[in-house]
Length: 392
Image (cartoon, rainbow, N blue to C red; front, side, top):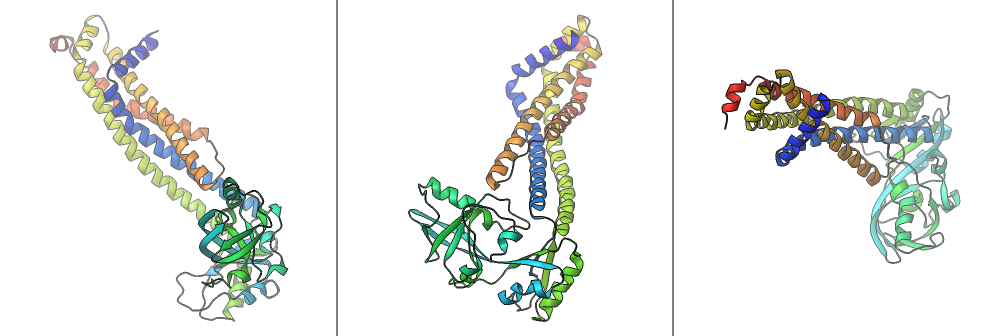
């Protein structure tokens, strides 16, 4: 009964000073919301990465020129396609070029990315077709293209229904659409163009005006092969062809290890940011409660005169602080989850709702209410009934 009365009085008190309560809520909402959003996004990104590794497997290496290298060596197509027969453990290779340019399809005009690939990319990246077919070995130097899932959706929204067999102009060259990819996760080991751009034969991409070079090569190894031995063999292979070229070779295990370190750092950073925001919000709550104590001195004196104990007054003001912070925690959790949902939709990630993050957010806000509400509640309970009744 006493708890119910305390809750009722706390709510009525907060509602009567709604402007002040709203200002105190802002800090808690921002603090909890930022932590929930960032934690949720981190979990979503990690889930996307794990999902991609499950789809592609961990027997993958990514080979590219070291960005810090000053050498003039280039990855030549004829050297790359010969890797399976020359390098230890290499089964298939998927060299890639990337071109960014103007695209025209009927009434649709936009700038997109085109990725140059070979037939083997279909197996290496484990792609699937929604319509038509993928590139074949017979399509070398031909002006054929495969649309990504997102590109196809945009064209259909613009009113284009028959995609396969139609023509698309890219960088002033007319390409024939031969297929549409199914939606796929990208990033890390899969290029983003597989989701948002178009795919063209790598030999055709090298005939475009800016003549792009091979930027990276995705290598599929045998399931029993040692990645370190395979990487060493690849370095020696290209070293014999260009002594000035330095390679950067990344494995799935390297990426997983790097992600774990980044997540640890990310968590520490989030903790720091969230702590600062919550401390600021907690100080705001304490200030609001101190003002409330000052304005309600006469009320406190009357209650003490009618028999209320110090513990009753302290419990009353603590309840107000906790309710204020819990409301902020709930609103902040909703804001954080909404932000994570918007981010996942924007990047095309699968949204995951984590109850643990929300529960932690509410519990932390409750603790903030207890911690920062204790001093004002203590001050209120220590007021002398006689002095409080004299207050006007």
